[in-house]
Image (cartoon, rainbow, N blue to C red; front, side):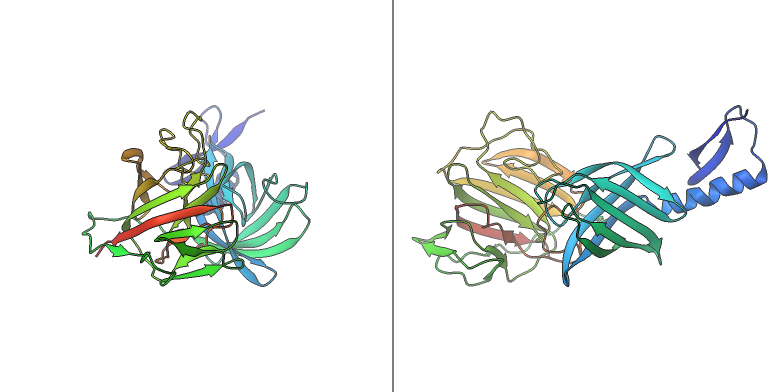
Length: 324
C-alpha cells in the first residue's frame, strides 16, 4: 500500500509519494489546494476580541512544525504568551485549545476560526464558558530600512503633577511626592497623552519588596518591572523581560527600595534593553503584543503606559527621545 505525505516545496505544500513516484492528478491537486489554505494561515495575526461590547486585544502566531503539523503561540485578553501544541486545520477552518493561566474557571479555552476575506475571524470560549467573537488581520512586519535619526528628548514627567498623563482602569491613586511619581498601592494604570513610533526611553524607578509593575512600549509591549531575585534564573516574565516573549541575559536588579533605570530603544519590532548600565536584551524582535496591551493595532503609534495595578511603584524620571 503506497504511503504519502505533504511537504513544503516551491513556496507551497506539494503531495509527494513516499517512494518518489508522482501521485495521481487528483491527489496532487488536493495536496496543493490544502497546502495553499494552510499556508494562508501561517504567520502572525493581530486580533480584536469583542468582550461584551468592549474591544480587547489578542494575538496569534501559526507556524509549520515539520512537514504537516501546525503549531503556534497565542496571547489572550489576559495573561502572557502561551504555546499552542497543535492547530487543527481543515478546509479553511481551524481550532486549538489552551489551558487557563491567570483567569478564573478551570476549563481549557477553545479558539475556533476561519480564513475569510484575507483575514481570520471566529469565536473563543473562555475558561469560564463565556463565548466571544473575534476578528484578526495580518500583523505588520514593522521593518525599518535605515537607522533612525533621533529628535530632541521629551520629559514625559514634569516632576510636579500628572500633566500629560491620564489614569485608566480604576480610581486614580497616583500622586507626586517630592518630585517622585508615586503609586502607593494597586489601582489605576497611567497612559501618556503623547503617542510615539520609534524611540529611546529612559526611566528611573523604585519598587517595594514583592511589588510588580511594567512599562509598555507603544502601549503594547511590556518591559517587566518586578521584585525578582538577582540570582533568579532569567525569564521573560521576570525583571527586565519583555513579558512572555524575550528573556534577559541576566537579572541585573539592585533589589527593592533602590533606584534603578531602564534604557530602552525600540525601532520597529526590534528592542534593546539596558538595565542599570548593562545590556540584557540586544536588538531582539518582539513577535507581537504582550498581555495587558491597550490594543493590537501594531502599525500605529502608541503611548507609554505604566502599570499601577500590581502594587506600589515610583518613578522619578521618564524621558523619551523619539525618532524624527
